[in-house]
Length: 113
Image (cartoon, rainbow, N blue to C red; front, side, top):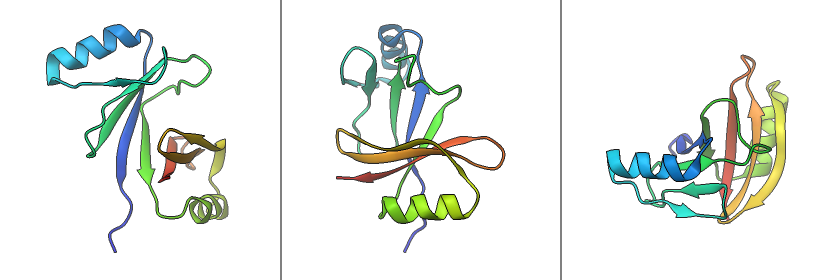
């Protein structure tokens, strides 16, 4: 079995319309909007999301790692000394939580629905 790797990167955004246009112009990315403050690519590869909700935006890009068992991953993060920064929540397509590693880097683990 292959070890889980990032399948999504969420970028903080101050202006979602400008950022969508920027990435479309550079890379040709088409983004699906999920309300006024969130949009993401839907390629099925390593996708990119734009988070413009000030209450939800992280300080740095947020790598998201797809895992087969979210609860087992949550237990492993906790046992390894990670700090849960956002408890498990649902989103269109699955569930995830966010945590910080010993150096303070924020990472998310997600499980598809």
